[in-house]
Image (cartoon, each protein chain N blue to C red):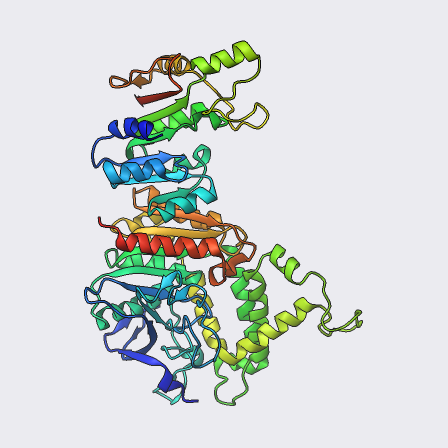
Length: 373
Length: 184
C-alpha cells in the first residue's frame, strides 16, 4: 500500500512561526475534501478532527480501510450534507496521516524527527490549516465545525480569523484544558514513555514500536470517552466467552476484552510520538489565558454566528465548560445558540448516531445557509 | 394566540435587540423575527423546545431563566420578553429584577387570575379554577405564583417600576391575559 498516492498534500511554503518559537517552512499539510465548492464559493466548511482523527472524515479511510471517524455526521444527505456543502478536513500538524509530524524524516540526519519535532499547539494547527482557504480561493467559509480537540480548533480559528467564517459549531469542548484533562493525558503519555521500545522517541530506527505503551494509553483514554451508565449497559459484568471466572489475569470480563481490542487496533493506525505531541497541544490550550483571563476578548472582533453543543453524559468536557463559552459570548452580545443534548454515550456522542445532535447540526447549518440576512 | 403576538410585536421598535425569556417552541420569536427585527434570540429550558427553535432557524440558548440571566450584561437588550411564565418561577421577583437589569424595557405577560371566569369558577364551584389558559389541576400545575392584573400593577407601583401601558387597555375582570411594558 502506497500511502503517498492516497494522501493529498498541500506543501506550505510560507514560514509558520510556532508558539514554541521555532519557524517551520515547506511542510506538508495532508487534507481531504468532500462535496463540491459552488460558483459563489460560499458553501465551504472546514471540519477539524479530534485527538486521534485524521483528514478522512467520512466514507472508507483508504489507509485503514475503516469507516471515517465522522461518518454518522458528514456525507451525502447527512447532518453536514456534502450534497450541499464543500467540506475540507486536514490532518493536524503533529499528526501521522501525512501532515508534518514527528514521524516525518528530518532532512538533517535522514531519520524520523521523533522527539526532535517541535512542540506544537492548537494555535499552530489552526494557523497551518488557514492556508487551505487561500489554496481553495475561499474568501469566507460558511462554517467551521469540530468536536473535542476539533472544537478547540474551532474556537481558536474564530479567535485568530474573526471574519473568515459565517458560522461556527464547537462541540463537546472547552476553552481551557482542565487539571483533570491534563492528568488523563499525562497518564497516556507516561504509559507510552514507560514502554521500553519508546527509546526516548527515537524508535523508528530499530523498528520495534512502543505498541504496548500506546495501547494502554488508548485503553485509558477510551474509558474517558464513555459514560459509566453506557459502560454498565453495554458490558455490565458480562464474561468474555466463558461461563465462570478463571482465577487468572486473562480478560475474564467483556469490558477487559473490549479495551484490549481497542488498544490493539489503535496501534496499527497511530504513531506513539504523535500521541504525545497532540495531547500536549491539547493540554497547552487555554484560550482564556491567551486573552489575559477574559475569554470574551477572544471573540470581540468576531461576526461569526455560534452554535455550541454539549452532551449530558460527557464528563471529559462537561456541559459547564461548554456553557462557559456561551457565557463569554453573551457577555459581549454575540450571536450564540446553545443546546445540551441528552445522551448516555459520553464524550463519544459527537461521533455517534445521536438523533437530536444530528438534527440540531443539520437544522442549524441549513437554516443559517439559506437565511437571507 | 396570534392576537397576543400582535400586541407584543407592536410594542417592539423595528430592528431593536430582543431576548425572549422562556421562548418555548419559538412561535412568538419567529413572528417577531419575520415582522419586526432579525436581532432576536431566546432562552429556553425544555430540550424539546430548544430543538424546535433550531428547526425554525432561530437562535436559542438552552438554559434556566432563574439562573442563566445573570450572564447578560446591564441593558444588553432593547426589549426582554417574558411571556406567560412569570408565575412558574420559584422567585418571580428576582426574575423581574433581572429582566429590568438586562433589558432597557421588559414586556411581561401573565395569565390573569382576576379574569371573571376564574373568579366565577372559584365562587360557584369552590375548587381551584381550571380554564383554557390555566388547564392544570392544583396538584400538578407548574404555576406557583398566580397573580391578577391588579396584583401586578400594585407590585410595580410598590417597586417603582414604570408601567408604560398607553396602548394597553386591559381590565382586571375582562382579560384572560395581562400584557405589560415595564421599565425601571
